[in-house]
Image (cartoon, rainbow, N blue to C red; front, side, top):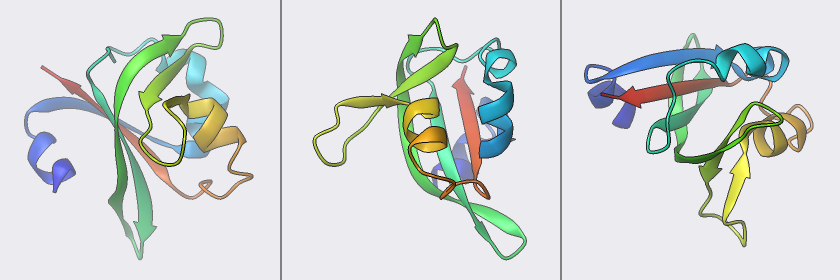
Amino acid sequence: EFNNFWSDYATTFEYKVTEYETDHRTIYSNSILGGDVVQLLKPVLWWYEGMHTMIIVGYDVPERDFIYAAHSSDTKDSSILGNICNASNGKYDNYHLKFFHIT
């Protein structure tokens, strides 16, 4: 699995989705670059497993948010705040976001 392999070769940052929503401006200051990866982790009992892995392709500078490549439906790309936090109506509140800065 992506998480198990790349955690040893990347600098990682993990946040609750709700934490990202409230503190995204500070999180944006971490060393996350285009080409790095964000993974949506779903809760499974007392641990989290990767549900969806997305590549960072840009930045929403005014909102201090990351743009990721989307590959489902007609969406070319989307922002974490716009699609995962806000548009999900709380669906992902118990999930985590794990960023992989590939070095």
